[in-house]
Length: 332
Image 1 (cartoon, rainbow, N blue to C red):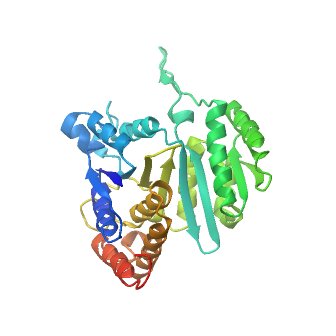
Image 2 (cartoon, rainbow, N blue to C red):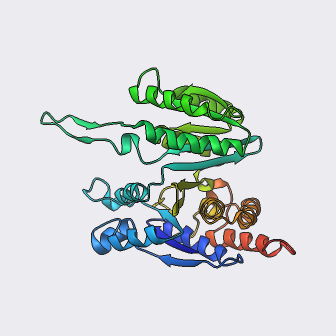
Image 3 (cartoon, rainbow, N blue to C red):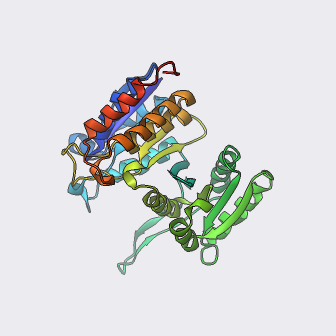
């Protein structure tokens, strides 16, 4: 199984190296290939997503990404984040899965990833007005809705569709299509929330949610809220899936340039993203569970500063490896 690793910017190379180190401990035949991406690629070749990198990703079984973002390019015409937007579009990974779990909370945000405000028409008019357009086609909504309902069937059987149907035409289309898809899933409970109410409920009563289905911009924001109420961005992983390989797997956190190079970045989100890669991208659910369990053990044994501990990136990885090696007679 061929995995392309895109370390990217800031703490990206540090957490990617942590994932590579832990994956090497699992009994899997993985071919890991590192490619330029993000700010590092801009510096090297002037493009955050070089053609060679894109070709390698398209030919891979999965893509594991560290982080995109470099303050040196803030406001520049060419920015690292543009590479990420292009990569998602080129791979057509339309369903972004962002699990959030803590005690009684066990929810999954399913975010449409390649449409909406981030991909609509944009520009500047002669009078100086700047505009970004939110656009959705019915088929874009339908395919991500079906993915959410299928996932709900494997969980607690409930989908909450989040929109702003009282104000936005795109949200009214969203609700109409989700309603139509829901007819095919009579065994899954469906309800709707406006995005402002959903944000409030995620803070006050996150345990009420199972699968949260929403469009790109709302999902970007709500998934960070969900991460905050379940431990923070340092623990939050994501999987971006299309209808075929490769999927794109990355931590939710950014490049965190303020702590880059200090050896204190929390690798938990990246390791959880690697577990999502094993589960959803490489059809290795048993090894995914082994890795998830090891990460949980490390979170308790070696918390990093962002979650109130003092462990380094390396000592967190050591704790995860200790947990892996202590599993005698298991799948590993």
